[in-house]
Image 1 (spheres, helix red, strand yellow):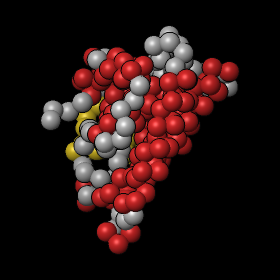
Image 2 (cartoon, rainbow, N blue to C red):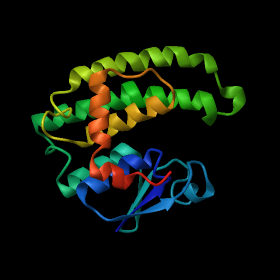
Image 3 (cartoon, rainbow, N blue to C red):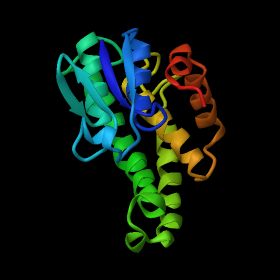
Length: 195
């Protein structure tokens, strides 16, 4: 059984949601980012971490990619045109959405107070707005890859949810509908820990 280290509401939700979609059993090892519990699995204290057969893996997208490839679902075969397009969506979300949200978080509560620049948020909101417009253009049906859900969708919706929680601007109706469809999935509901 896989073990996932995190709170289930941070980036570890990406991993537990992936596992739920794949129908794979796992145990959530509760650890807040930066805690001693998290550092027992990852010296940086960042979460998530995945423990599989005695080995520990870090970085949510690397974990999601490994799980999807290993179980042959939520992804296209490596080396195919479809996989290149899927990986493009994944990289777009990481570069244009996740990095913007993480920078905002660092300047709000992660960095030491003397290393925070609150004035950075307005340009980040502007960047995120542009990214949401581009994300909407990438939707090719119910999912980024048309009729096939992939890990890129899990990542995109996690970032949309994060943007909403961080009080960034509200996305378009199309993106709100996309996010709601994804959050209505039984696997998402199972992955989300109780409040």
